[in-house]
Image 1 (tube, one colour):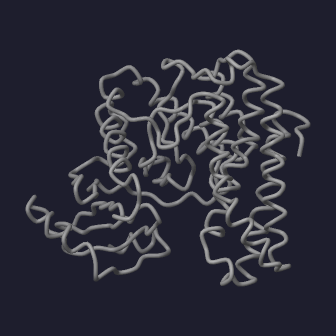
Image 2 (cartoon, one colour; image 1 turned 90 degrees about the vertical axis):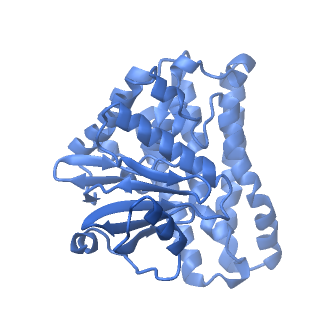
Length: 352
């Protein structure tokens, strides 16, 4: 287990939970000798188990998370798809329990990538292109739509618009507090709503009604890991291993390209944009595509901003300390500037 301590900086012993799952594993002849928490997130909790001196991954989904069974089924179907098509850079499914919401996987070696190279970027794109070879297989038919799949320009817009509608209540609550510490946050939300209006106006100028509402054809959709980025990749020597497919499924290739460009902390550096272009040129061949991409990049820039702000708005505003506010504001402003520069370098002068 010593290698686990080297590969993960935050590993804590959890001695009070998941004993029922361990007892159930015994029925399958799997006796857990030791375990460590390797990741504790909002949507799932991951353990490294030691079984007969071998390591396994146990991933559990909390009971209070909506759609928890869909997360499990998405991960299960996507991993089975990869395995059956001999794409051997992800964990293998050993067992799962739909009622108790857990999946047991083979261990994959590797460490998080701190400095992304051009080779890393190309290998990520190769993985994304490689899985498309098997889109027409029986194993692909089993795969659900990605958790936030959208297939029309209108639905892309509605998905991001819904995220910001959730801000309305907290926005008015903050205004009533009349707290100067929150002015920067209010300014970010104000600007985001204005940009959302500007994006919609851009769409109405550039797209016909039919273009706005029509979904892309089934043969134009791709298989996507969805939560794409180097945070879900482990590097073992020269091999990249891909993990976490709880949001994976069929999706719009334009959305995947936007996420590759705009992912805040773990995306492909813009200096390696040619690797993204390689994927885009092969899988995105829509009429009026330049304006589609400008529209979607501006839109998904706001989606990522909403994700950055989400922990902030789900907190008790009155209990937030000054440091947390400053961190939130700095991260938001940094992302807005960096993402604007990325879009601008690709498409020229885009309204800020």
